[in-house]
Length: 433
Ligand code: S3P
Picture 1 (cartoon, rainbow, N blue to C red):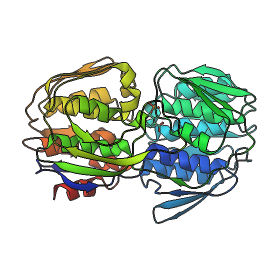
Picture 2: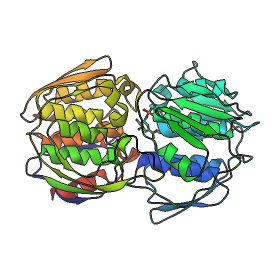
Picture 3: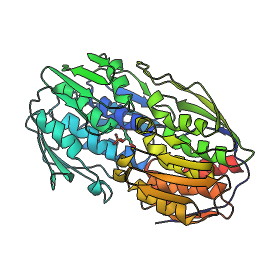
Picture 4: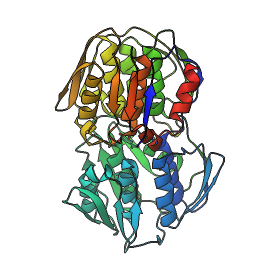
């Protein structure tokens, strides 16, 4: 485990291109593997998580040719006699792989696979996918009925009408993918809009797919066909730089090539409400498109005020809510996040981690069951030491806190950043040079 120190920086300035989107990279590779014809994926994210997806697909018989940031996936087809039956599929640290891949495997009659991963994955619930897949006819077993390892026995599935008990794009995607293989049609209803990258790929693949408000219906298909997929910049990775540019005075950063998909840009709307200066053409809510909207943001530092984040806003900012806590620690007044209990089952318990971490740097912050409350007076955090607890986003949060602090921050376990963003320190240092 490596530590890294982040001293208070001068302003962040210049153009910044974030790494490729993690969610879209996972989906592009998985959908590519389900196609009969090869699918080129341009700008595939090179990170530990997305490598786990390529390794799992290789094990299932797909071909993966890598070169120059691009990947060519030679698929095995939607209903292929998948190889490695009985085999163990290692998802590493990736919750997205752990929840999406079973959707495909569940619809392969006669196949049996066990998915497992690292220590963090073994603490994260999978009953949320086991339940709908069992209801569709698959045999699914989890440790204590709830945790990985997860064994999936494929079957001829039947379509269901499923109401998601948790707002989760991963579970939604799992059921929609299983729906491609299930008799009849499959409907998933969500309570609040979550990221819709899977839906966009389904539309691109010309799969019979309808959306009626928060109800999504997909029908069984014989095969999948997709042409080239170009992965845009990751809004969640970019959010760290947006936060630092907002907090460190005199900063001005232009973020290029970013995915501006509405359910991914909730953090930007919350930050703007707090006073952040972020110019850019964010997508309108409810947009039904095949492609991801790609654009740029112009971010400048600004003083902030506290805000309240309501439960309905949570899914569109789920991976950035710890950054809302960081902004709140520098803002004037109270910042409250509610309805974000899902943060407790991410790569780490992010409510406990952010409260313990920012408190150690001088913040006045307390945990609630499903969120946190931060009180600031508009002055910077002092600094200190923060432990990433093996969580990539907590490591990067600590780094941002350091740049904006008065005394600097040491991040214990900085190497965790490589799960989603291996070039993080290099990109950051280029902006503060
Ligand atoms: C993701 C969905 C979110 C998010 C995760 C990636 C996805 O998880 O936190 O980082 O790619 O669908 P949940 O669906 O569990 O909220």
